[in-house]
Length: 253
Image 1 (cartoon, one colour):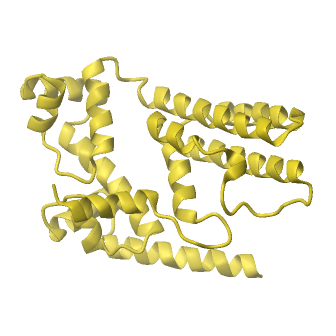
Image 2: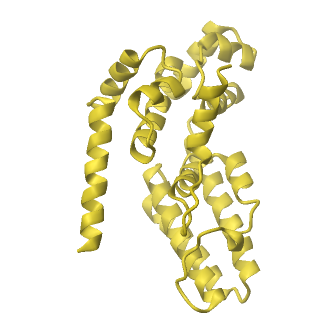
């Protein structure tokens, strides 16, 4: 195992900055974890009380009202991320309305903190079920979980087959039948999705990302990225940077 590549990938997922408001990296990581249905990670993130979150802005002089406002913002963001991830629009917003109404009835900050955990885990479980609704066998569920947790390594069919304890040929056929695509294509798609997030929300260069996500060469990473996204990683990063700058300028005016 390349410990530097392992750390670089984990650093992107867990990085935090010492600034006055909550750092964007971990906040983005939180919403993406809910969207992807990562139950284990979300439950770990919810171990810390919502009221203890560092960097919450002051939206009200009243502490209870302040934390309630932040809860409402979080619910709205979670709903939008889940819609982006495939949750039905009305279902996502009906659920957010329900939790906002529950928060409105809370009379103590610790009640809102507990409600935050319940709400977050509820959305996450629904997203996981949504992603698994076309997958019926336990081997494929285990296979996909393994892929998500090891995107920073080189994953082969043989490795997955050994992990699932199935013959490689049988696993390949089963995976294609249940997901509609090959194992190799699925791994590619998930890695490119992660690469897009890293190009958009981190300072890593395309070369660093190619190494972190265990692509054999930078040129192969560029080739695969262009096939899936329609442009090179560098052009994608430049476009995201321009869009961010335009958005900042619009907020100033």
